[in-house]
Image (cartoon, rainbow, N blue to C red; front, side, top):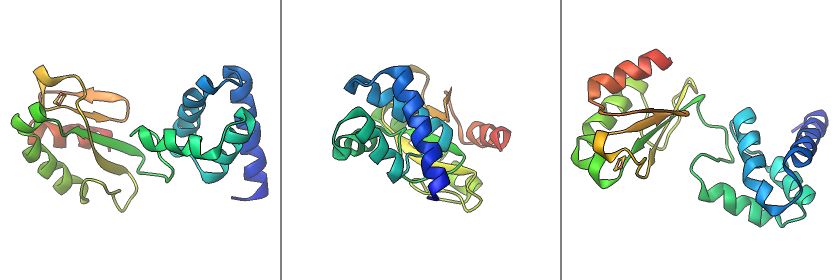
Length: 157
Ligand code: FES
């Protein structure tokens, strides 16, 4: 990261600390904002957040690793999360996943070559009665079939 980028990142985090407060409970909100803007939380941002909130960098890192929607490396522009819990599994999740992998050209856990999509599994999305379910970025889709999932991804493309 260039010095000018580091300075901009520090200013951005300072503004978020100002907005959300310096207490520990602001950590997740700040991480969420950085993730939203940069699509990941760079090492330097983690250090700065720790410094400005006066907590240990390991604490910042452990929160990032705990939440699936936070990551330390940039992923694809669109994050596709398919529920891998039991009900979705019984409702045909695997066929949906196979169709998604074929359409996007990469496996779950990977980012497509063109960086447009990142595929990953999620735990129960709380939509078991209308499963299988997946989320593409913030939007949730239910009652998936392989065809429906491919159609949705083509709209997102
Ligand atoms: S098991 Fe998939 S939404 Fe609950």
